[in-house]
Length: 57
Image (cartoon, rainbow, N blue to C red; front, side, top):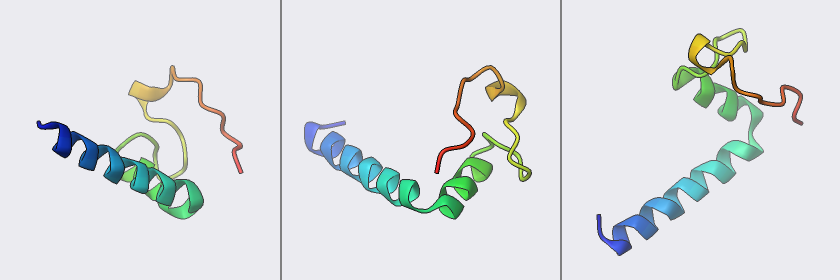
């Protein structure tokens, strides 16, 4: 991966992060779609050991 490609990728990640951080529904859908949480909002088994604040608004 070239430096230019890396910078473009990082910028795309930052844009996606900002989009998700502003929209609670979109961020929840992302977490469900990637398999991190269940539809009910519970952490899936591989992620249960993580310390994540549950009440962020």
